[in-house]
Amino acid sequence: MTALSLRRATEADIPFIMETERKPGYDQFIGRYGVDEHMAQIANPSFAYLIGEDDDRQSLGFVILMDLNRRDGNACVKRIAVSSPEKGVGTPLLAGAVDFAFLETNAHRLCLDVVSGNLRAQTVYRKVGFIQEGVLREAALLPDGSRSDFLLMSILRPEWAARRG
Image (cartoon, rainbow, N blue to C red; front, side, top):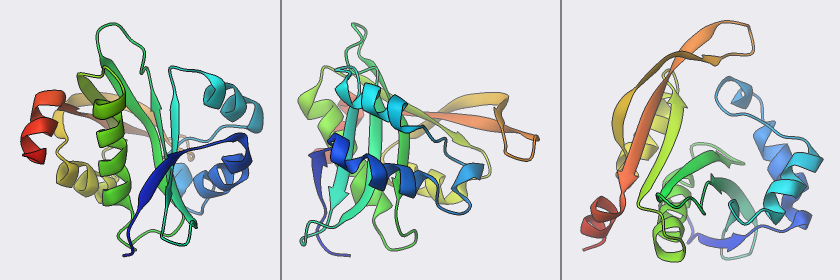
């Protein structure tokens, strides 16, 4: 894995984001938006769209953070996706987004929910320091109409700070 850097997404990144969130199999685990919704959220200060790039400035994945302006400091990872799974991009991409949340915003708690069957994502989240808090029973509606549990996970600012040394 080459070095990964993060930058704020622009409207020019929306085609990459939409293509990535529509990769085969991703519909089981992540949502997708249309152009208008992505454009509105990129412009919304409570969201941060982050693009992970390699040394050649090739886009490798994206993270959408939301609720960044909440007074209580409870922010959320709305979506994370990589263009090529199993290449070692997910962990540094998420770690960079967590750093962004705690360095650039007043977030105290960064949470996410993950479909219980998405073991690859759960492994990445735990590597970065997220801890499972609970289960949202049958909260996920899968493309085939079946239901799955969401696992609620979070990392707190003091936990992040301790991991950074």
